[in-house]
Image 1 (cartoon, rainbow, N blue to C red):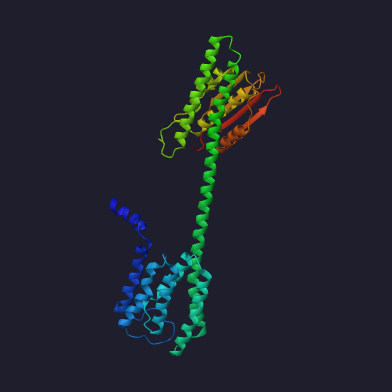
Image 2 (cartoon, rainbow, N blue to C red; image 1 turned 60 degrees about the vertical axis):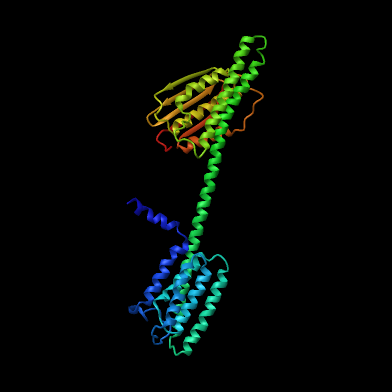
Length: 384
């Protein structure tokens, strides 16, 4: 059974000429069978001629070029058309005549260059064929000749439609690929922003504080150790992020979630920010997209508190509900802004996009007392 299932895949991997050859061979064989002699297309009311050695050559010329109908559509169409014309002039009326609309359809679908020239030349070649048949005694009426020509035009039109459909599908896939790449770049930028900004901000704040501790060596050593630990965590998180971006990364690599919030709060406290943390409910296991986004919301809010309200009392409240996670991070604005740091506004904008992508709600507002509060409601039922 495994071998049988592999046959279609192996067939698709074959060269296109190999896949087109069976049809060409089938038409040739059927046309040469005695029971099918004279049963093909008859353009002109002329008596059928018995098959001879020339008939074999004409049938072969009329049908075998279908082997190259997709590789070299123009050459295949010219050969098939020539074979069809000889078939009609010698009045063999072979079944292989149906190769002409097939070749026209394939040329309409696969011919890339000189399409209009090909149509004009083939249309012009139809008139000498009609004149030659008339001189041989054909009494085919103009209406029938025009109807046959329109049938050939329809075959070309079907091929052209298939070509345009294929081109439209390729364009659609290109747009999807571009949109996917753009979304991936945005995601990578957001991840780098979250990881780098948080740790670097903490390091800068800790280094600024250490400048004023030269008179207290024991406290200075503690402060510098905190800077070193934060730097190591930054390197570790960056390596973790690079592992996630690697297409060959282990699918079991974990991502931050609400279960890591206590560690995040402790890191922020070590940078000199007084943080009160309250958590209700139990984080989901395994962690999903909602938990990851909630973690990023808290991380970015604490980073902003370090940058713009260093030293202010900051509260983090997280509630794990059955259908959603509610997050609120606020400060009273009593601290001092770290002057050496600036913001691009990308962090909060990125958080809003992440939350809304999960059909959640996000807000970031300045309070009347000068503080700032960030709130997010993230549905846990959203797809990961």
